[in-house]
Image 1 (cartoon, rainbow, N blue to C red):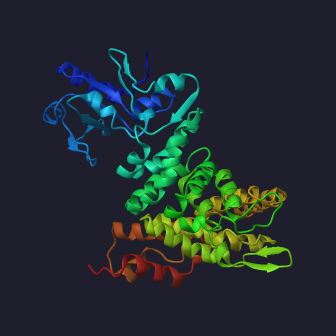
Image 2 (tube, helix red, strand yellow; image 1 turned 90 degrees about the horizontal axis):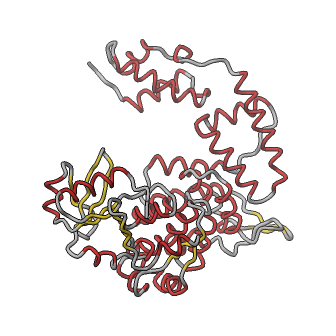
Image 3 (cartoon, rainbow, N blue to C red; image 1 turned 90 degrees about the vertical axis):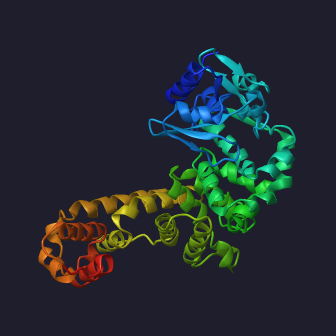
Length: 433
């Protein structure tokens, strides 16, 4: 069998072979190569002792995993090297059969104890735990989310997948054990899944399994909350449609996932119509809480919660109102907010798409008419910067002006002397030299 194994893995295997050891590409690396994807993780298994790996390669560090593996940096890229005595035994410790395969690219020997390659060659990827699935999930709760990541990887490759029934039953039974994982790790695992081709399916399966209520209980609470629209079952259903329709960028997928998270907290009724007045404000607060809990960066939290807060913006009717809207939102946020509105519409009432396209043209027209803007157009100059910061001519003056320019470029309303001076003081403080 021939497989296109990444060159960095080949280099490490060749070095180990030349030193007299067995070595194989393994696990996720071989799986992804078999289904035609570029591997997201590079892994090698060998019978060489860890001490010898440290001798053969220049940059070697112990891995964070508790399996005695090493991380070898090859051309600045990490390759995980697992040092084994009886390397075949290691395959039995993989959580899923589809990951329990290894390949020697020089002898073209494929070690495939569960005949994974046969099912993949027939066009189906089987998601099945190795041995007792309940034991697997209890030993390592990360594997609960790995199930959905495997769905995502097979979808990335356009490969049909099948979740083995006993593995599903164990997933349902063990879903609560996800609570033992550090929250930051949960967030990272969700990130790998949310950018996939069918995120709506992955989150629906998480909900059905009971896993969602432990990792994102606020999202789980939207299930069963009635939503307006003939083809929409509830708020959760609408949210899944929006997540599916939005571009697969991490911050956009999260904004779509959380955009209506506030609806269960502000329900009101008028006849047979349900309303959620102010849900974007409450949703922004909840979004901050969720992303903070999952240990996302301050910048990421700001970006997502900003989109959630503003996603219900009223469409401006006049040229001046459009300009005010652009200045309020800022050019750097404008494209993302319009993309969220497009996905929101496609997750509900398609008839409003025409209005959105018209609004985009109005924005383009307003931006086209705006005069060019440069640092020279700021309401403060280098002399003002020196006076405010108490500095002499030098690089700090240019840096301060560039900072102000970047801010004002996104929102022309900030180009007022008193505002700019305040921004200078807040960002740079007072520097006396």
